[in-house]
Length: 262
Image (spheres, rainbow, N blue to C red):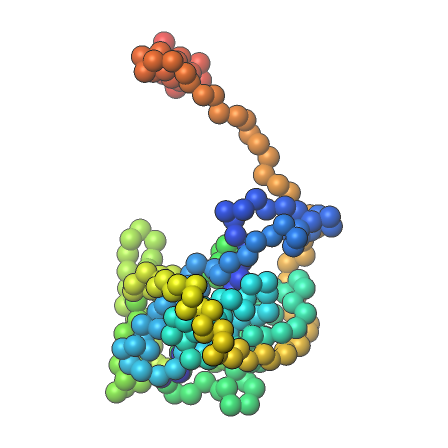
């Protein structure tokens, strides 16, 4: 089984986000990035499938800050191959990203075989609609399902059983032929941890393939006029004193705002 995992670096919202001088993008000097959480689950799901059914896992990522460390971490977790796509990604958005990955799969010796599976995170903090995966599936001419939380492989019939989550706590199981593209919401197990020492060791013994891919042309996307930081709506009032005094003040505040009868 050939499993491809497409990884994406996103801003780490634990850190304060600073708008750049142009007012249209985040300041790269103040920006810390990390692997998108759903992509981390997609990688874990790929490793689990490999451990159960054998095969190979190939991780593919667009060039970005800190991406090399993420690719070597994928090696340390159990990936067999890693590919970094290089190029000018300024302003590139979901439709173009999908075309970029599609061009990778259409290149020599990378066509999807009858036992191929492509996994992505179902969404990212800067792409809550999760558009890349369905765009990519359409371009590759293969089926797609998103918000996936479980995958079972039927090797004899070359198909997979996919568990998909819906709103309201509902779940549904779908049967798909291979090859296919899946948007993973959560792996069947939490993403595994690998120590830094193991990652450093892998850096000495593993090789990340670098492939230059020109950005697709003629793909329209959103145009950002300006970014704004959130406006502070007010400050919290800290209540001091004994519990009785604090509870009395809470009642006063609720009454002042018409939430309680006097």
